Image 1: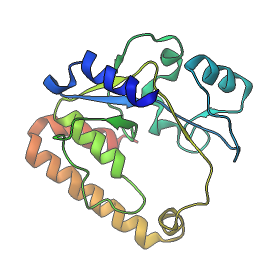
Image 2 (image 1 turned 180 degrees about the vertical axis):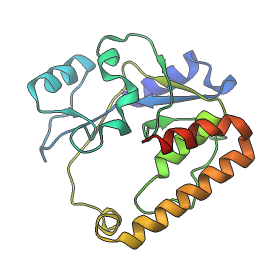
Image 3 (image 1 turned 90 degrees about the vertical axis):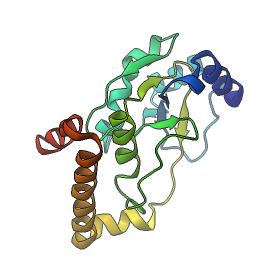
Length: 186
């Protein structure tokens, strides 16, 4: 049972005493009807058969690539991964972690900025070896449509990103330079 597994992981990893974000590897299906896998072995079989994919593999692979799905396939214990630009995993964190930045409502950069801030605060990014989630297909959101169709929307998001970087620099000093450098080299 997923919630039992997460509770167990939280206790074993002593999450109440350490700054860690537990990453739940994300997958997706293009099928509207899917029998949810009962185990990691079953999920891997579905992945190999092509009825599942790693999340956003076709459109935005770098959003979840740092999860290191190749390592996850055989992992039996949680493993640490490093922050990379545009990383936006689904995470389990303590309630007292930094909040999502409210500038990023709608589509774009809410999870990316959150993970960046967790990394700036030296949270460990730990991938859970037996957890997974599956994104089901649905109609595109109103906000993603606005993002795709409106240069103004994209321009506003860029301005908010720049503000966010300035705020990180003020709060974390030189340690925050890696985020700006990474952004500029993309």
